[in-house]
Length: 114
Length: 112
Image (tube, rainbow over all chains, first blue to last red; front, side, top):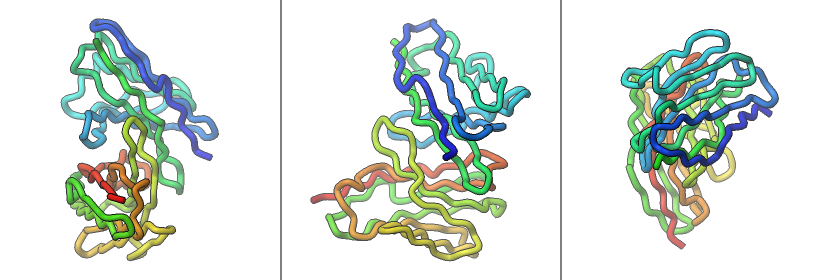
């Protein structure tokens, strides 16, 4: 139980294009979704917190106009990387809190911008 | 206040040995302390977690030791196996109200 399905697992895009990453909660309602970014050999760094039906909260240094987060339903949160550049290449992971059980994580999306 | 400090950065252990990874936190509001295992190209997978009302929790070969007064917790992997070779992250949270804060990670290599 408490599964978050994240897609795509890998994506390669051209510089200047946009990429959408989806995270769906399959068997529970995710009112909150956390979005992390992980560069190679580094830890997970929180980018933003999204709450269903409201604007996302971004961490300091994260461009909200570049990383668009939508959380329009209790089962779907999306992260869109707009006008992607090679420095945006990273591993993006979503996570949702699960009542009394901690947190559940998506399987991650490897974004490569060429 | 939100930092979680993890050590060592890397660890090499012989098969059958004990792997020990340590973490320290500052924020006393944290009440949930999980450990995650991550293989290359994969998302983090929960290994074991502890809450501050107990000092130790064991699940199979994995044990968390928790010292509330020192604000430290550690992961012990008994009888380490080559398949345990991965990166391990400690984290701290406040029961879902905010995102987990992760340590910097420990790359474990278990030599056969």
